[in-house]
Amino acid sequence: MGFHVTVERTDDGGYVARNGRGGEIRFGTSEGDDFTPVELLLAALGGCNIVTVEPLTAQRGHRLAKLAADLQAEKLKPNKLGPITMTYDVLLPADDAEAEPVFRAVAERVHERYCTVSTALREQTTVDVEIPETLTS
Image (cartoon, rainbow, N blue to C red; front, side):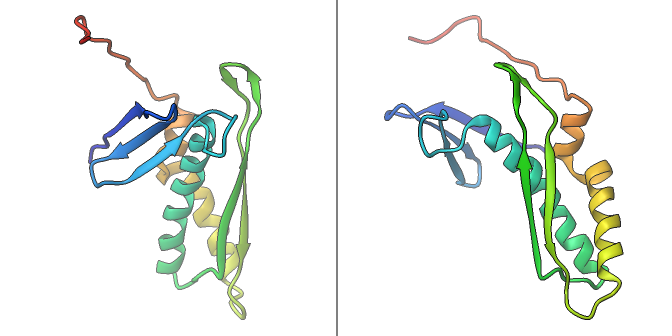
């Protein structure tokens, strides 16, 4: 399965990312309300984990009453992000003593093995940048 998005500057000075299914995410700098690229990275990490944890926990018979995550990171340098901390905010189902250990095991396994974004960050996925020899004017 491949992934493809386009990213471009908009006429109003912002930026937009689009996928082939019609989805759009507007983003910008920290001067406005839009997400910054680093915030989108954090959202991608949290989202990848949650959308993977949810069905795996439910398949084991434990539908969590609430599943959210808070992600934080600091810039160490203008181009260097420090460690990312992801803290789950979970409300377990009432009268389900098995839900907590199942959630904990699934969440750990998802982060270590199944979340593509976690893996990409941990293993420092190679990014190749191509600049065409001929640019249009």
